Image (tube, rainbow, N blue to C red; front, side, top):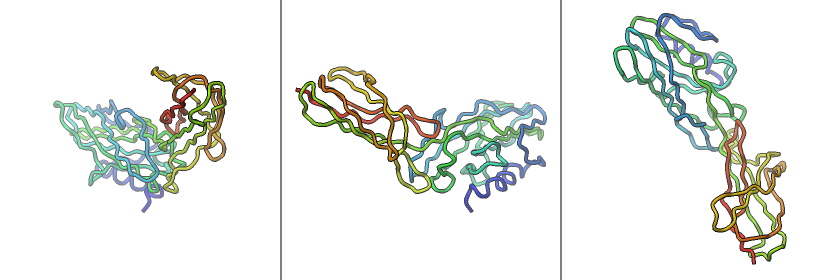
Length: 259
């Protein structure tokens, strides 16, 4: 079965099998159990290429005065877990988190999840995902959070640059071309990212800082092309600042010898 087609059924049965608690679209609290300090992928966006599965870790703290019995997290994309279009269940055999006792009332819990292009990753699901979480105490108290944490799942971006001619006489025209692409999870390829603003930057030879010369937009194929006047030896690069679905990326600087 494909995850996106069956997530609602699977998550409801798996997450709540140990408790007589109905699935819900809002937080539920019974007793003093709490979930806090949720961290996804070390606090960074999960950036995934066109074909390679990415495994990320989710950690959180659970507290209950009677001690922690068990906990579970599920990742999903959508307004709420019941209407999600895709998601991921933890890699453990029962879908639950591994919880380590800190003291009599507190445990730290962790799970790993696979984000797999073409399976639970589709282009339409790039952007904001959420963590659904539930935890139970030894006294059967529990807490369920529909959105314990939001995080980004992004399509890996790539950016190239080429400045020519090389060498070039001072005062002559330099043409700078490039291409911005990003992972297409539906096809397992990289395709041009169209109509996106990209900065042309220059770093003079012997310095360490790039300066923005102008901003242009990619065409419908993700291609870039502009011209500048040759003034000094240095490196040209393109810089894309990113979107919610696609991370920022800089091309490796291309050196121009100005004579």
